[in-house]
Every structure is written in C-alpha cells, then in structure tokens.
Length: 412
Image (cartoon, rainbow, N blue to C red):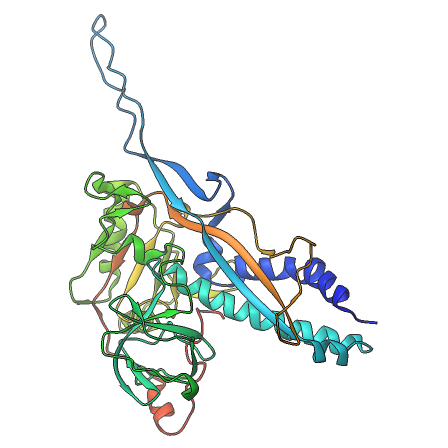
C-alpha cells in the first residue's frame, strides 16, 4: 500500500538524483558549461582569492648585477553571501489516498509534480544567470484592468507569482499570479482576484525574491554598480568587462574584434557565445548573404547550435533582444554549500502537512552563488540591429496562440 512514507522514500531515493542532474546539466546551456564547487565556502559566505596580473619578479641583467626584485602574484579577495534557492511541490491528502492501492497512479502523481518543479526551477535558474541579483523581471509601462504592458516579457511565464514595487515599496499584499503572457505586444494578464494598481515604472519581481537571487551576467555588466563581490571597481579597474554599445549590424568582424581584444589584452579565451534569438537570426541572415556554410555544433545536454569559428552561438530567451555575450565559461563557478537537497524537519521528514489544510508539501533547496573570477575577460555587445523582429507575429496575430513561443533556451 502506498503511504506518505512511500512518497518520502521515492522523493529521497529515486527523484532527487534525477532532478539534481536535470537542473545542473539540462536546465540551461550556459549553466551546463559552468563548473560547480563547494570549495571556498565558509559558513554562509564564499571567500575566494582571485588572482590578477602576473608575477613581477622577473627581469634580465648582466653577469654580476643584482637579481630582479621579487614581486608576488596579485590577489584580491571576493566575498559573497550564499543565496537561498527553493522549489516547492504540494500533494493533497485526497490524491495520496486515492492512489494508495494503485502504484501506477501514485507514480504518475509524483512524476507530474516533479516534472512541474523541474520546469519551473529550470526556467528561473536560466533567468537568474542573466540577471543582476535583484530579481528584476520587467518594468511596467501601463495598465488596463488586469493587463499590464511592460518593457519586456522574456522573464515572465504563465503561472509565475510576482510582487510589484514602486520606489522600493511593495504594492501587493498577496503575490499576483500571471495567467497569460502576450509575447508579441509585451503584455501579461494576472488573476482578477488580486487586482492592484500598477503605476508606470513599477518594478516586477518573483514573489519574495527581491535582492535575493544569484549574481548573473547582469551584475558583471551593470555599469552603475560601483563594486562586485565586495570589491571596488574603481580601485580594481580590471573588474570592468568589455562592453560595446555602438549601434551596428552583426558580423563576423564585430564578434572577432571583441574576441581578439580579450585574447590580446587580458589573455581570455572565449569559448561560449550567447545572444537573443533575434540576434541569432540576424547572424544567420548575415551568413546566408555571404553564402557561407553554417556550422552546427552539439553541446553538453544535447543542445545543438550554430558556431563562430568553432565557438558555439546559443540563443537564450533571457538575453535582451539586441544583445550578445561572449564568455570564457572557465572563469565562472557556481559555489554551493551542497547540491540540491530536500528540506528536512527535526524528525527527518520532508513531506509536511500545511497547517490548516489537507495538503502536504516538500521543499527542494540549494545554497549557492555564481562568481566570475575574471570579469574583465567577458564581453557584451549591445544595440545590434536586426531586420527580423518576430517571425511568429503574423501567425499569432491571425488567431494562433503564442503560449510557449521561445519558452526556453535553445534545445529546450
């Protein structure tokens, strides 16, 4: 007979390993290229020595002259707090009892819940990789009833629960649940039961997550940030990455200029390029115009993508429409206290009854933070012009549904 103990054993011994692998490898092409480590984790913080420059104790001289003055390697200590990442599933008592004598129904019940958890977690992990740690999803422009127009909607998806802030003041008492995302007109609709006034320039965040997310690429390339990982960018100017903001069309020369600059000046070898699907289409259009063969490469996790001189060029929904990142993924580490684990009570139980409700919940947790050892070895090209805007728009506007369009990174 299936019991709550049976469910707990399945979650611990069967599903946990599978879920952890899917989130670490298959959640996002960029995440699959980043190494994971528990090294340099001290209590609730990451303290890591990052080297820069070279050893200065070298020189040349005559046969009897003085030896070179010693000068050791340059180091700076990065300090960052581990972020708390959670994923929660819920089972009703009725559903568990209904499948008590049917192991097949019980397996389907757990599998559906875990599949939903993996999908939601993968979406949010991918989104955080490109965020700045604040958790900002979008900025509102206008509101009509429960429909809100935003500056972008690539970070939004149906079912997401969000908070609304105006000048750092939270406006909603309960999270707003997104019921539909119009990806053509950059609008979303939320449940009417939670209607609030969303003023222009209001900021949208995942429920309870404001300023608690991992530090992604947005943190590295945010010019308004005066420090990163507790170190001043003004004191250590090598922390500033390569940024190109000249409005231009995509080309091999544009990409190669950034690659050559990083190679020649900071000894950084670019091995991963990620961009919006709009920029990728522009690049494909550029290659086609010059009658070039488009090389396809396969990444870890089964992703297939085009490449630039052997470097994969991956489209990701979380990259802004006019942007391309050129990265040396060897410089990135996801520092973690441990891999994904179930949150356990003092009695060792992971399935707990929700007080006052006939439901049980289990929470998946990971304590981690993303650190780039060499921010100056990364590049961002923005304001890339494209003649292709949204090839799906005619289909959608003629009555088709856009739900799921560009729903994930390439290959998902």
